[in-house]
Image (cartoon, rainbow, N blue to C red; front, side):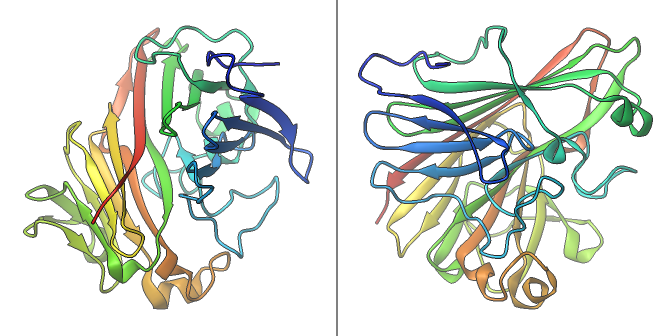
Amino acid sequence: MNHSAAGSDDIRAVEITKDRNGIGLVVLRNHRGASARVSLHGGQVLSWKWERGEELLFTSSKAIISPLKPLRGGIAICFPQFRNRGSLEHHGFARNKMWVIDQDPSPVPTDSGEKAHIDLLLKPTEDDLKIWPHSFELRLRVSLGGNGYLTLISRVRNVNSKPFSFSFAYHTYYSVSDISEVRVEGLETLDYLDNLHNQERFTEQGDALTFESEVDRVYLDSGSSGVAVLDHEKKQTIVIRKEGLPDVVVWNPWEKKSKAIVDLGDEEYKQMVCVDGAAIEKPITLKPGEEWTGRLDLSVVPST
């Protein structure tokens, strides 16, 4: 089964297999050696490797690998709730559900298609409808370009008879050499909600965000302009572009909180940073039949 629109040079561009728990796993590859792994559990991207074989996403060494628990790391889909901003479980239920491969995906207008890709689908179960009584279809396309760039396109359709509202985030853990050597650019002058100060609103004053202690912020109305994660030791920059996702979450738990997180190593905060494309402050409302699209494009460039 090949869901790729890539050329014939791509050998086994899309491989569908299973992980050690028997859960469906999709491996995307391009002809230059880049790859991505996507689990049907949560529709979660578990790995994104550059053509040199370097892992760009962080996964905790203490991550609990279980069909009953989301994995700490990679790119998790937070829907229909972010964190505890509502009555549902933390980050909503989508990241802890079994998705299926969409055998008859509808066209994605904003995707060129010249990529190895997989289309996944999530629909609510009867149990889901008891806790969140809204019928929806959540589609996810994960694409790996010939240049190694990673694209995620999510579409939420209201198949209900009444409107509903939701929040959404691509909760993305990036692997870094040392958090003290990392800068996040593209957030200057933006307002943000500081979760370490009861979501009080501040304005970013610096030209870049650096890390010397715990950071837990939601930057608001960043538009579609790019955000960059610069790793000075790796001499590498990850560029984040997004559509339909006005907010940017930046999180690093630092030392004290890391020790309190069961599935995160005590010192692992040094090797990770979360920078999420999200729609949080102003929830998205869909009328019956309407569809929302949120897109995340990730690329890597050398930096000095």
